[in-house]
Image (cartoon, rainbow, N blue to C red; front, side, top):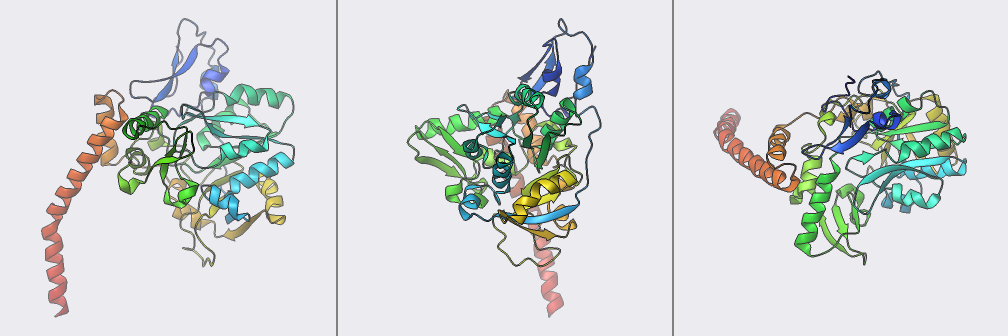
Length: 396
């Protein structure tokens, strides 16, 4: 009997489903909304192909970065419309100019997110901006296989676990240039859908568009916003305002279980180059420019360096080389995965108790966290008072 990766390791990449010639594997949500593969034993012939392509069960080649840049698009509009320095937008446009296809994420009408391949410049707009939710590569793989057979080159910008899956399915593929995105974790799609439905019901509006980092409110403020079909924004909240989805994501509460054991949260990268927000900028060497909407580029392979060179030489982007240790020290996800904090551990209990109801689970988790914070404050109050008195007496 074939054994697939355990839930604590499976990323839901669907590589196993893609290579199964008997269609014995399906990717479906479990009881709490996390998509995982399951095998129909009546169809399985125990060929083992699914195990051979599983990134969670096999070694993945990674490279330590050779250069680090603080970078941004030289077109101001591109920067304001993008989540960070708009380097991905510049890379996509350059790829199309070189006759390559481009791979990125789109969000469908039901707010599910999917990786797709395109040869159209207008699709860059759909690929733009961060999408803090699980994204499926199921639609991508058959189309990418077809284009590879036709000899077409592609720029793939995706999460490291997705790139690892693509590499396993299409090994030693010179037609693909990979850019991996530094990722904190992915939240199941159903949690996002439940959250949007709750807001729609409360506001009496139907959402047709959403942002995790709304450009009209400045992307660095991380506003979760919803728009109706007339293009009117009817909801915009941040983590500090108590938006349950934002709290779940940005406080490391609602990710897939595998994200807390991520094999890719380290300096060694699977992509030819890596993109992320630049955390820790200026901490290892002076930096005289504006830090807002500045991306970090890690160059990991000669192929990545070759791809990026025209963007820098032709002044499409500004790229200032930085000490390599600076972004690695500044970004925890380049060191290790997120830890399961008290809120996460509580969430695991509540999401199971409420049978996958994200909103009910998060309401309880947030209330319990506030209660813990209150007790912690009261417990530590005498200690803080004693320390303050001690400092006062020492100063006399």
